[in-house]
Length: 427
View: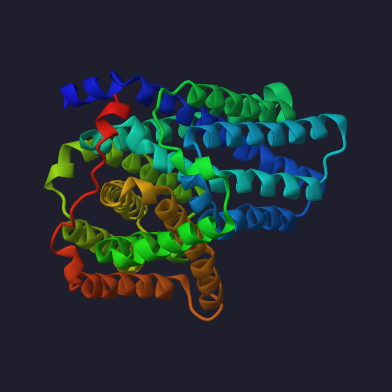
């Protein structure tokens, strides 16, 4: 294991990409708190926060699949650099507007839309460039390091955000985010990669673009194993919506608790997810798709059903807290390990020339499932209580496991995509 980490960190491109990712994550964690505070300060209305959140999601859902084919035809490193600079410019305008007094909620909405649109191009570019940075045998270790480091940096950023805002104000905190985007762009620019951009030689072609767009969907649909794994990813995103959207009602209706219960749950979940990303490289060789399917479904079903089953005993503080800690720790480990396995498995089976398109399609679907499920939950909660919704989610997890477990495309490994240039570019 030590040798694997040593080899990974000997890779200069990985070190630079990791640094860019961590700097970005730190800035985003500060910006998330500062921006929400600014919106509420300007408007005094929670509805504007919801509107801006929705505007942030729209480009991810609708623009990302369209961006994938264009990204495939262009230099992905430069796309990442330019989009980072666009995001830096937008948050710079936001911070300056706050300082000079011309910032308004509609302007924040416009800037948020531009930032999210830039991210719709950066996400598939970042996914497609990953195999050029890290050789295939180091995928698991690299993603483990990235996720664990990002979790730590995000916790630090969230923890110091209030102090930064108190010290230099909300505008200063936003300027910090602007600087992180610029630093990220500089680090990405310094990557030494050998990209295949021969498709650019003929210029942009509308017919070629739509041919690539169609080709991406056809390619994804033709790989049955990829479709099945994508269904698992969508399931994981959707089945957690009842928990994410009903945490406060869960605490009050099931545990008759207060904000401290939420704090214990959130802290335990974050720590266990961090632990899961650390231990993943140690167990990755023992995992297969059906094992992970059963682990995810039974773990999530167990979480929901056991949470409701103990309802009558939660009057005992120690039992209630113990239940929260144990179930949150179990869920965090399962989510972390499951997400990493499915992400790595997806990258391994997709041919590089389709990676940006496949990533953009998958990312859009994954983003779309959340608001759709949240809408369903918002309707259901008007008629039934949180315990009933949790039991329903647990039973859905069991049923999904049964249906997908019988899918024969998960039985045998598909030939993994091979790129003859990978070893040269990842050095």
